[in-house]
Image: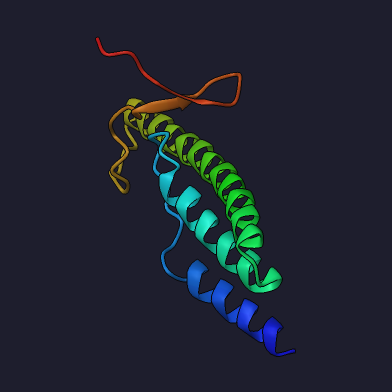
Length: 121
């Protein structure tokens, strides 16, 4: 019971260290590092070995990277939605400037599901 408490406390501290924030820029570094750190902490405490920490770190890094990519796709979709909505409101004369999404997004989600940058003109 004592080791479970330590594992749970360590995981909570690592996950609370910083919220996973992803903008529509294709960067997943923060989520990868947080996932690797929490995976290594939990793996090391659960197995009491360096090998368990290494395996937990790799698994946590992969999971954190996947979460970062998902956050990026969602942020790009949200940016595109607000940009299109504001553009349509401006065309209809009902634009109220409640959001600052009056510029085109920097990236977009392609049909392959990956985040792509718009080419520079």
